[in-house]
Length: 255
Ligand SMILES: [Zn+2]
Image 1 (spheres, helix red, strand yellow):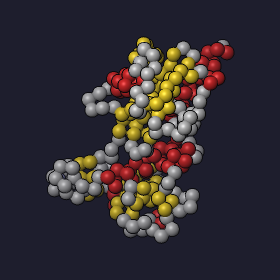
Image 2 (cartoon, helix red, strand yellow):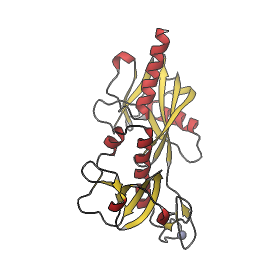
Image 3 (cartoon, protein in one colour):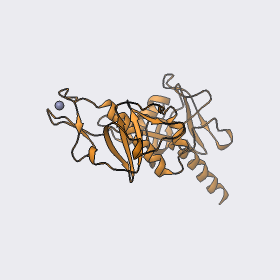
Image 4 (spheres, helix red, strand yellow):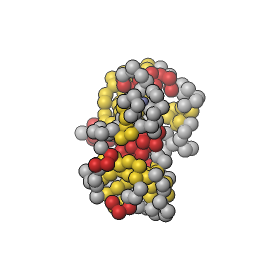
């Protein structure tokens, strides 16, 4: 499908990273020069993977900041998809079975081995992300990966053969040593760091007291609306879970 992609507006990528010129990340067809391959991103939007990085363009350094400035979910999804396709293309150059050089698939959004016909689709890694609640309070944790003072929901990758619900129970138990129940799906979000699909849930505390594992999670606590720590940015599904929980509590207390 790669050669047949036409679009008015283009993301450009080189070596797995989107490119920018100053603050500009959307380019015109005239900016698409020597192209390895082209992918469709959205109606009227394409991604061109360039063999060489054009003079004056630099790799996007602050993808989180760009996503945070998205004006709506359409723009967010477009940017997330372009970024993930760029990463995937860069990391899937050769066949994992026979080592052949992958080529664009004739119909699908995929790459195919010309030797053994193995097809590689863009990689998506499903993860659970959960806000565990206990009465008026919610469980927030400080991860070793966070900036100082930042707390968020728990999250983790779903393992092969595992359901989302089983992964959620396992991750919560492994990271903070409690058991949960009453798992409710909230929403999902594409999270291009580099290719997660975050499946957002609420769950209720069932038993146990918080014991952070000391590796992934350094601190964890039950927080109420009046004592919230530094939280993730509003566009993240982590923050949406937290905001939704306290908004619902507020609504029910003022009815
Ligand atoms: Zn092969």
